[in-house]
Image (cartoon, rainbow, N blue to C red; front, side, top):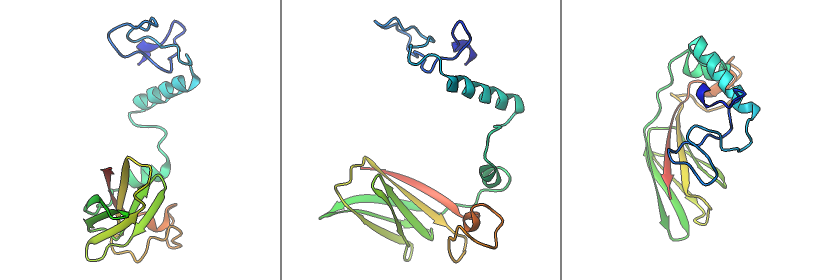
Amino acid sequence: MAGFGNSGRMLPEQVWDREHPTDYGWEFGEGTGGATPLAWSMAGFIRLAHGVDAGEPVETPSVVRDRYVERDRPEGPSIDATAEFVADDLVITGETTADVVAVHTPAGATLATPRDGSFEVLLDPDIDAHGITVAAAATGGAADLDIADADSDHPLGGLRDVGTAVERIRL
């Protein structure tokens, strides 16, 4: 990455990554002139170098480190979701071992509670989206997903031990 620096050793925001030159005079590995140089490109390089030197990322938020590094990640539920246009609705259905399912579109999110391992969410078929995200959470038997769980010293309260799975559906 350091090899992409200009004569002042500053990193450009954008580097031409094609073998062939252009009518603009861009050449492989050289900056394209797009806001060259930007301080954030250099800051990103410095953070990367610091992390490489330390042997691990140096800016991981403690809540992320606690969940994904310091302890085992909770087992996620199974999920299999599909989308189908039916009459005046976009119907998201699926099978899951989750306790709760969230269906997210650009217009917002809708929660569903699976019954006997199945769920269904009706959406407006006119949503302006190319895809939908379906997320499932298994609480491991917890009664609810209260993020303000007073019995927990964890910042996410009752969400600490939730296993998750995500599926993306292209429309």
